[in-house]
Image (tube, rainbow, N blue to C red; front, side, top):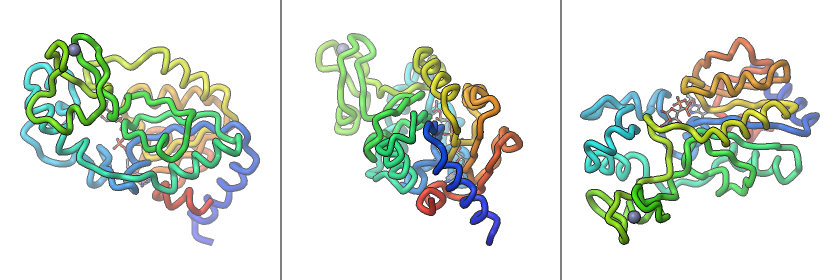
Length: 242
Ligand code: OAD
Ligand code: ZN
């Protein structure tokens, strides 16, 4: 057996026994659906733009150069028509079987819900929903995609912003507490498609203490040494083999 086949076999056995799995994921979960990640080989942060790549995801750019902010959002973030892949679908299946406690994701694409998952915590928000930054009226993403320049609120002319967490904004503390609680109560934590480089990913994963930790990621992560099973492969491929 090849190394990965052996590891996948161990993972299959662990998943069969588990009753309370928590999955923690990132952009690598959606690359097999055709969305780019950030720090992977073809990641958004490896490309050249006018400004340093992280600034395109910052509150500062939205405030000081909203035209540029929305140009980027429309071209690089929203211009995709994608479907859930084998990883999203398998997680939804586990939830139906009562094996999965929660999905905690740093992704904003909503693909877990599209696959049928209900127990999803979106730490960085969801791109499909927007709101007026002044009067907080809710909008659909079409309010950004089907307009040009700076999208404005119909009522107060405030800027319409996607409900995603930008650099310079705080994460929702209640969501973080909920996520940590799920991880503490899980009988197994599977981490996949995330470089674990953005706070608080590492500290959240540490909440699983001495319980089995599985990491499925193409690139290295700072917690590889802590993992009971570590698979360097595509997550959709691994999940479809389970
Ligand atoms: P990253 O791009 O940092 O990490 C994605 C990881 O997934 C990389 O290590 C890739 O090697 C790996 N990967 C890519 N495709 C994969 C696949 N098919 N199977 C397995 N692994 C794969 O993305 P995140 O960790 O999600 O935040 O990044 C965290 C945050 O940084 C994002 O939510 C975003 C970004 O700045 C904000 O915008 C606030
Ligand atoms: Zn408004």
